[in-house]
Length: 602
Image (cartoon, rainbow, N blue to C red; front, top):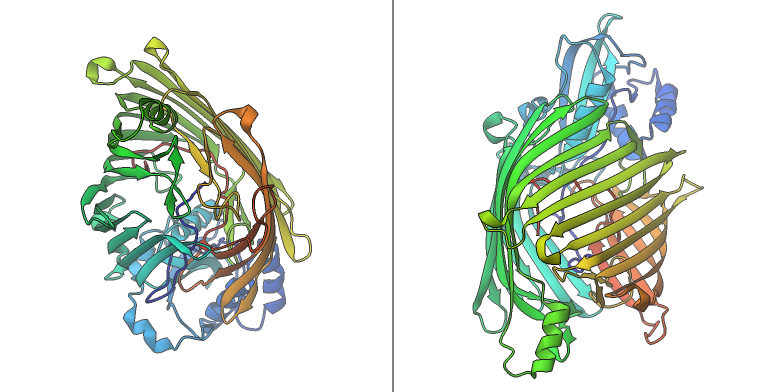
């Protein structure tokens, strides 16, 4: 139900979205000289490498005269070679000289992320985890870790290959609902300051009513440690009057669980947003009872969290902490409307102000077994998906004596299970959040989701994704929206609001082909869904359409998506439909949400 990014795309010097990270597994082969091409092809097919990744492994091992070690387990690591690739090389149509305008990641930055060292025995789990960690770095696209034969039969050499994405960029995103621009984001930034992965950037955000200006700073390995810090601040202006409408920003500082062997994690954050909230349908503010859906919004959040992690294959992360969360909402000037209109507007649209101050305790239990797949959410690069169970249990409180508006006891329980099916999988997710409060001021939400990723059948995969939201106790008067470029393509963004939501999306996604180093694929889709305040009022809307997916490994791991959707429901014109360009797939992979002060958003 993201109504924010309908059309977004990225390029170097004017194109980019977010991070790129490749994939790699330690036992992946990569032949060296022409002595093992057949063996490499067989192992690469088994391990799921794309043609792009196979060509990189072949070239870099051959240049070093190395041969893949097919059985590295237990052998002593005698040498670790770091190979950092430029953004543009002979595979790309861009001239190589433009690389001088880009900061390539320093070798020590890569080396400090490794969970294995020279002189230690080769352990596949550590190598695989290192690849996943590197893949999570915003500045890297391709990540390949290959064991090569050492100077003795009991020795192994590790070749770590990474490729940067373009660091100096004008990130931008544009939402287009047919011929109307509904959102624009400009984020000029340096994503790899001095090759250290530090980030500094500016920010400009525009919607149909406002624009904001600000900055962001961040570093995920502060002073060479595992601590990370992020700061951002923005001021909001009205597009037409020029008046200041508010501001938003954040400060985060802490140390995450950066490896499976990390025992302790901690973090603290402060976030704020003070502005005028508006609900748009396309470029126009929606109305209820003849009143524009806009109101004053003020939120301030602060929290501290301490985590103790147990286990390795079966992880148990126990968290304790303290949070203060203030949400205040008030109507704009409604003196020009009748009391009946005002009463209905406040009852249906205005969220209820609430302040919660209190402790929390949380258990996150999950397996750390992963499978590497291709052509699920991105193109031409491996993707890791966790197998088995994923469980979250959380209890939190609101204490009136400390300033909470409600004395409450809250609980959150979420469970997912991922079952592999050949080179696909099935993942159901259920979640329940309940707040029991004094004076019957209860709030409760039930969520269910399902993703079916079919095995490859010929040149394509079938994706079936469904979700259901039911805020069956809606004391806080919160809503969801549906429509636009995501769950219900072809309709206006934000066209269907409500506290209950159901959506089912079926999408056939082709495998990718290489066109001038870009990975290109197609899609055909069928969407069904609706959102209302009462279940009995749900009337499922339908749409069909076609789309194109493009990935530029030099700039991003996230696909660029172009979709053309056609409404099929009565009362809506099927043709010419609605055209959207965007980054990312139309619906996110369902998962268990794990609350953390370092990732809290609003």
